[in-house]
Every structure is written in C-alpha cells, then in structure tokens.
Length: 345
Image (cartoon, helix red, strand yellow):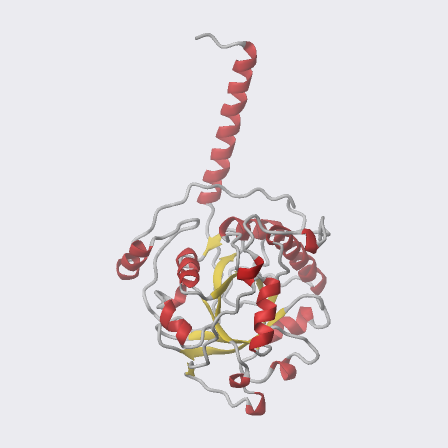
C-alpha cells in the first residue's frame, strides 16, 4: 500500500525518535557505576547478589544469587529525563505541598489505622552507656538496611523490634542497590513501615540524582518520606568537598524535586562532621535523622530538632546475619501513629 506524504513524514519522525531513545538508553546502561560506599556498618562478608545498574532480582533469583552470585536480568526502561538540566539552582515548588498527592493514595482510614508496635529486643555488639538518655527509653525502634545485610527474614526482624525500615535505594546518578527491590517488596509484605534513602554524590548534579531516585523508587501508598543521606565519605571515588553554600544549593534542588514528585517533605540524614561543616542552623523546616552512636543527639547536635536517631551501627538481631544499624523515633507510640498518619503517601 502506498503511503501519503504526511504518513511518510510521520513514520520518519517516529523512527528518528525511537533511535534517539534507544541511544540514550544504551548510553545510560553503558555508564560506569559509582564507587560510593554508603553503609556505616562493617561489611559482614556474606555473599550478596552481583547485579548491574538497573537490574532487579526475583525472590528465587535472589536466593540463587546469594549462593552463586548469578546476575539478574537487565530492565529495559530508560533514564527519566531531567527538567533541571545541569544547573544545581534551587527551584521553588510550583504548587503548595498541601495540593500535592500521589497517583495511588491510600484511603485515609487505612493510613490512620495504628500498626502494632513491637518492643525493642535488639542487642548491640558494641554497647554504649547513654545513661538517663538511653534510646531504650524510646518506644518505637527501627532499622536501615542495604545489600550488605544479605537475605533478611523480615517477619522475624519485625518481631525483634523493627517497626520501621529505611532501605538503601540509590546513590549518585547511576547506582541502584541490587537488593533494593527485593527488600522493598519483602518489607511491605511483612507489614513494616518502609521508606527509601539516597546517598548523595558530590561529583554529580542534583537534578540527575533526583531523576535516578525517582526512576527506581515507586510512588507507593503508605510509604514513608524519602531520605537524602548527606555525609563526607572518605572511601568515595569523589574527593570533592563543595562549599557550604554549594552543598545547601545542591541539596535544595534534590529535595524540591522529590517533594514535587512524591508529595512528601524529604528527611535529611547526616553525621556529626558533615553537620558541623554544612548544616548547623540550616534547613530548620526539614525533619532530621541524626547519626550519634556515642552520645545523645542533644550533645552532638545542640539545638537541632530531630525525628530519628541512629544510635548504633553494630546492632545484632535475629532475622539478619551480621550487624545492622539501629534507629529510634523521637516520640511515644501515640506520636508515632500521628506522624505516620500525617506523613505517609
């Protein structure tokens, strides 16, 4: 059948755009992964799946990979294009936060239904005496995990006191934790309140990193707010240490983009040295998650309000091999339920 001139032009345009999209996808998949090391805990030496960028593993494949390090299949989806370009310039929210809502919101009645709180039963390989400010006095504890925890028994971990979990998702603009999707799915099935965190890489634009996180972390009803993990990492391939002004500008671009997409204000995770250099007195309208394994946060971060306290990087629990980071929510059970009801998607 003969094609009209208009049909011929349209067909040519579609062919060109398809080739361009395929080229972008191949370029993205061919880029070298970052060498970021984000876990603050000692690697336990257990076998973990060897999965390349953009790959995912099924439950059966994950078990096989833990034993034989077999790769999983590569996903075909391409990078989400950035509307920030290469400019790390803060962009104000286009709409008030109250007007933002996820595409698949959870019914309010379900979001406000209180979950069972399991009491703290973790142990610590390197216990610290926090005195009267012991984290054991806090009612709601949780964990954060990455590929280094290997295959987790989530039902057991929850009954040990993991009432929430933050799961390593991404770092930089090209690295996806190979256990993220399996951990995300399994934590949800076990009934844990769960969220994802991104380790920020200072040698990549904030817009690229936000796009990478959005590409890999689902907009899921009931999920906790996303977390930006900002630290100085001596093991990183990126040796750059931006100025305080540059740090704040890059963080703002990243957080604004996530807030627009997920409809939730991101949480800032940080460590004492990075906080001292860049965040003291800044970002007062953002919730903070503070690492403080030797003293109460009030001593290490004087005057800073906080939401979560990471009090140990050497936790021990049934349900996971090796060590695990331990965290606590700043409040009682009622305050936890109230915060969840107001913060989940």
